[in-house]
Amino acid sequence: MTSKINYTNEPMGKVRAVKDFLPTPDQLAFKEEKVKVTISLSRTSLDFFKAHASRHHTAYQKMIRNLLDAYAEQHTK
Image 1 (cartoon, rainbow, N blue to C red):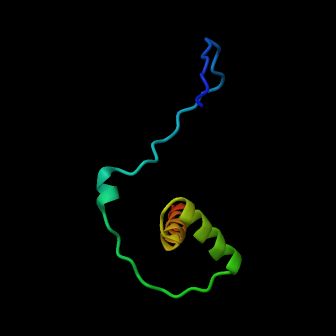
Image 2 (cartoon, rainbow, N blue to C red):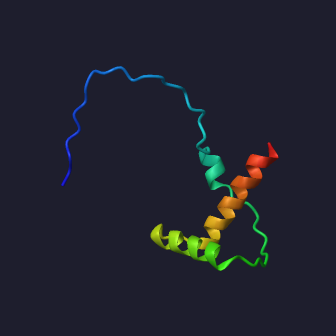
């Protein structure tokens, strides 16, 4: 069942622009070199990533790699 949205002509309040954070098509097509490593994870962390990967139909290793890449990028700036 779909609920109907009723729009009103109310003030929006404080609005701020958000910097464009989406990658360009070139960045999406780029394949970065991957290096195989062995890592020991806690059972809790592994179960967390496996459960979420299953829900999103992806590989848990990819989710962990993306998390580490985002962390490294954030702290490299």
